[in-house]
Figure (tube, rainbow, N blue to C red):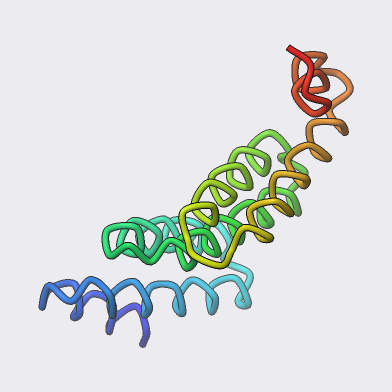
Length: 127
């Protein structure tokens, strides 16, 4: 239902509502175990949120994608999305704590990738 509402809102050029409905639809897909579909829907919502300057919601969507990839043990992708989420949160007012937490999460994931020395160096801030 929310996905239908998102499509209708998008057709009516109401990007804010389309993003909100898409985000809610993706949450339902996650709960239903259809996580790959949810990731694609989150990506659509994120783009719409960014377009409207709603960086905290875009950051939240990116964080959810990162959490999905982390649960799939795809740490490189998880770190990539957590890093993007941190960047989004740094653009939003009053969300510097979220940005910092996600940056630390990225460093933690990089530290876990002991088989990739460049990532380990990045985690501890050595160039």
